[in-house]
Length: 281
Image (cartoon, rainbow, N blue to C red):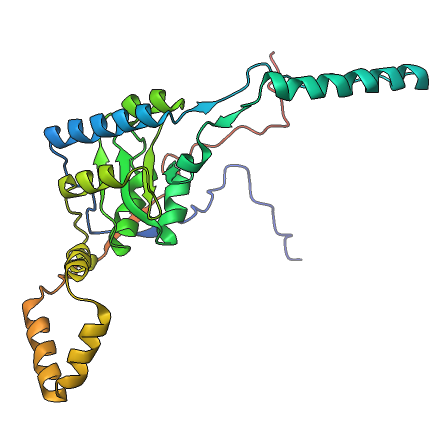
C-alpha cells in the first residue's frame, strides 16, 4: 500500500515573490523661470501698488453675516408675525449695507485675472497681455505650467519676488500667486506698456523664437499689404525665401528620455489591519 501524501510542515520554505518594478519617464529638459533683475522687480511692484491704491480696488467681506439658526415649528399666528418682522428687517439691511461683500469697482476687477486657475483659463483662451507670478508659490509645480502656456500664446510672463506680500494686502486678499491683465483692459494700459520691456524672455527648447516672432509681426505692415506682395511675387521667389528662413533658424536639439525604475515600498513595511485591535497580555 502506498503511503498517503503528508502535508508540508510549518517550517517549509516560502517562495519569494518577485519585486514589482515600475518604469517612469522623466522630462530631460529643465524648464524654469528667467531671473528678474532687482531694479525691475522694485519698478513692477511700485507701479502696480500705486495704481491699485489710486483706483481703490479692494475686496470687502461682511463679517456680520452668520448662519441662520434652526427654527422649530410654531403656531401659525406666531409665524405670521415673524414673517412680517423679517420682511421689515430685510428692507432695512440693504439700506444700511449698500456695498455688501465683493469687489468695490467691479468693472476694474473684470480687467484682471487673479489666481493660478483664473490665469490658466484666460491664457488657454488667449485673452491676456501680461502674466506675473509670485516666487513664493510652493511647490513650484503650481506655476511651472504657465511658462509653456504663456510662451505658446506669445504672452510675456515672469516670476516676481514679493508679489503676494506687497499687492495682496492692498487689494484685501491673503495671497496672490498669479496675476494677469486682460486684453480689453483700459485702467492698466500704461502700466502694462511700461512693464513688458522689463520682462525677461522665456526659454523653452521646443518653442524657440515664438515670442520674438509675435513682436516682429506687430511692428510690420498689415495683413492686406502682405497678401498683395505675395500675389505679385512668383512661386520661385517664395520658395527661395522659405529656404533662407529654414537655414537661418536654429534647429531644436532633441534629448533622450530618462528612464527611471521605481520600486514601491522597498523596505516591505506592512500596515497594521484596521479591524483588529492589539490585545495587551
